[in-house]
Amino acid sequence: MDDDKGSYIIRTKGLSKIYMDGVEVRALDNVDLDIEKGEFLSIIGPSGSGKSTLLHMIGILDTPSSGSITIDGKVVTDMSEKERSKVRNEVLGFIFQYHHLMPDFNALENVMMPLLIGGMKSKEAKKIASSLLEEVGLGDRMGHLPNQLSGGQAQRVAIARALANNPGIVIGDEPTGNLDTRSSDMIYDLLRKLNRDRGQTFILVTHDEDMAKKTDRIIRLVDGRISEDYSISHRDTPKVS
Ligand code: ADP
Ligand code: MG
Image 1: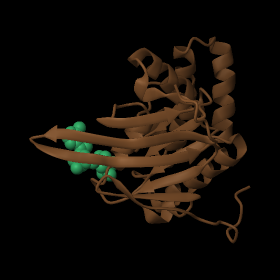
Image 2 (image 1 turned 90 degrees about the vertical axis):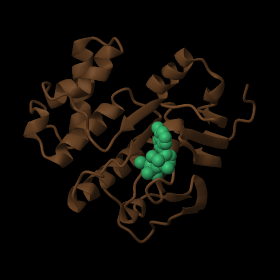
Image 3 (image 1 turned 180 degrees about the vertical axis):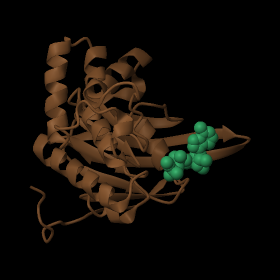
Image 4 (image 1 turned 180 degrees about the horizontal axis):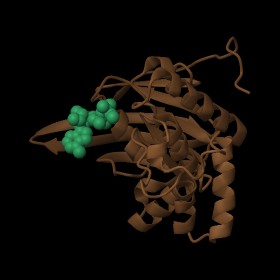
């Protein structure tokens, strides 16, 4: 059990992941990391440095070779798969590089889907999904199919879908990796706004240093280890309304 409850929402201790791929690949090497509730942070580092691996561990999408992960006061590395998927569904929201929207369903239906799967009545799911689409600036695109949306708009639908279950933690693996600079800027400004308005914790993997600088804290990985961990002051930058 975990009695050591600080203000952190995520804590990793000695987290390591070794892949056996002919040779041994140490994708994560003894990572200790504390993330506080409501942080807006990015994980950067060269390709192959372990960013996705770390994010997959935090997202309970994969298990470490050794070490522990505590999420929202629970040591998830001690849990059964059933308990792990419960935490995954209730606490975590995911945004990936490719939006993975269902092509035959419109924006509204795509955002409703996780709610319907969770057992919510269609009418209530519709209400929540439309208000989320309003929040991400797509109130006038709800009936559009994914291929009738721009890349940036489709990614905003994916963000609304990630928020449908109102997760405490939102993780994104290269959420703007597929977008031009202008759309990327808009997505980061939107994520920042959601972080401010909703107090949710955002953890974003990116290889784009300019995007990372928009967050409040940068963690740099090199060869599976944290090489830098620092905060950024945004006092001089205008607040997003
Ligand atoms: P990043 O996201 O920073 O590019 P990854 O976390 O994807 O890095 O990968 C870290 C290291 O682990 C790399 O050397 C990669 O080749 C290796 N790796 C990742 N996933 C696997 C896997 N499923 N099997 C074997 N090696 C893997
Ligand atoms: Mg990656």
